[in-house]
Amino acid sequence: MAIYNPASLKAEEFISDAEIRETLAYAEANKHNLPLIEALLEKARPKKTANGHVCAGLSHREASVLLACDIPEVTERIFKIAEEIKLAFYGNRIVIFAPLYLSNYCINGCVYCPYHAKNKHIPRKKLSQEELRAEVIALQDQGHKRLAIEAGEDPIHNPIDYILECIHTIYSIHHKNGDIRRVNVNIAATTVENYRRLKEAGIGTYILFQETYHKESYEQLHPTGPKHDYAYHTEAMDRAMDGGIDDVGLGVLFGLEYYKYDFAGLLMHAEHLEAVHGVGPHTISVPRIKRADDIDPDAFDNGIDDDTFAKITACIRLAVPYTGIIISTRENENIRSRLLRLGVSQVSGGSRTSVGGYAGYSSDERPHDTEQFDVSDQRSLDEVVCWLMENGHIPSFCTACYREGRTGDRFMSLCKSGQILNCCQPNALMTLTEYLVDYASEKTRAVGFRMIEEELKRIPGEKVRRIAEQNISDIKSSNRRDFRF
Image (cartoon, rainbow, N blue to C red; front, side, top):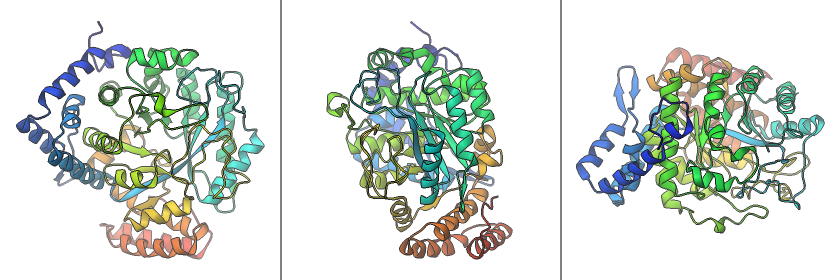
C-alpha cells in the first residue's frame, strides 16, 4: 500500500487511497463534533491585518469534516464564511471567459464524453486556421478577451503543433477594437517539452480535469486510449510546472464517483502542488456531469443535488481561499447565481461547446451536432454581463496579471497579502468600460456606467483612482484600449 506523502511525485503517494478513506472515516466520526467544527470555522474565517487579509485555509481532512457535517446552522455558517473569503480576496469581481472548441477528434474511450472513439455517429470536425479565425472574430464581436481552448486527444488530428498554431492564430487577430488577450489551454496530459512549448506560445492557465481521483473508477471510466494511464494523467500538473507553466487549473467531474472521495482527492492535489512547487492551483473548476450525445447522466449513480453542490463549492473556498473557482454554462442561471455568493470567481458566458459553434450563428441559435455537453445557461454574453451587474458583481475582462508577469507564486503572494485588489479593481472597471462602449446593449450600458461610477469611489488609493478615472474617460472618448495596472 502506498504511503501518503504530499511531497511525492508519484500519483498514488500524493493521492493516497488509504489517506482518503481514513479522511472520510474521520469526517464521519467527527461530523457532529461541535468544538472541533467551531475551531475549523474560526480557522477558515479571513482575518484582517495591517497588510490586508490573511486566511489559513483548511486541510483536506479538516474541510472533509465540514462537508460531512449535516447540521443546517453549520452549513449556513460555512456559506457565510465562503462569501467573506471571496469578497476579502477577490472583491465583487467575476472574471468572464468563453470556451473555444478546436477539434472533437479523440482516440480515448471515456464513457462519460460523447467524443469517445467508439461514437461513430457524431460528426468529427477540426477547425482550419481560417475557420478558427472566423470563430475568434465572432467571439471578439461578443466582447470576449479571454478564451479556454479545448481539443480531444488525437496525435494525428490534434498534434501539439496544431495546438500551437491555433494559439498563434488567436493572438494574431485584431478585429475592430477586439483582441483575445489570454488563451488558457485545456488539452490532454502531455510531456514536459510540450508544456514548455505551450508556455513559450504565451498560454495563460493550463487546465486539466482529473475527472475522478479514485484510481479503480478512473480506469473503468477510461477503458481505452492514453487517458487510461491514471498516473500519467494525475502527474501532469507536475510536468506542466516543470515546463514553466506556473498557473494550472484543477477540477473533477462531480457525479462520476462518490463526491466526498473526489472532494478530498482534489484538495490533496492542491496541497501536493503547494508542497512541491510552492504554489497551489490558480483555478479549481466544479463541473457536474451533463447530458450529451449518447451520454445519459442518469447512468451514473453518483450524481449530486444542488444543495450538496453548493456546499462542495463553499468548502473548496474555505480550504483553498486564494484559488479562482470556475463555474461554467453546464449549470443553469439559478445555480450559478447561488454559487456566485459561495466563492465562485470566474464564469463563462455566451458559450458554445461545439466545434465551430460561434461563427455564422446568432446569439439565440446554436449547433448541437458536435456539442460536448448540453449547455444549461444559454443566455448571450450581454445578458450574462447585465445579470451579473444587477446582482452586484463587476464583470471583469481583465488579463493584466498574466500579461504583467503576475502569475504563479507572484500572483499568490499579492493575493494573499490583499495587494492584488489595488490592481484588479481598476483593471476590472476599465475592461468593463471597454465592453460597454464597444459591445453592450443600451440597457447593459446604462446599468454598467452606473456601477462604474459607484465602484470608482471604492478604490482606496487616490492616485490609482484618478488614473483609472482618466483611463475610463479616454476609453469612452477615443479608440484607446488596453489600459492596465
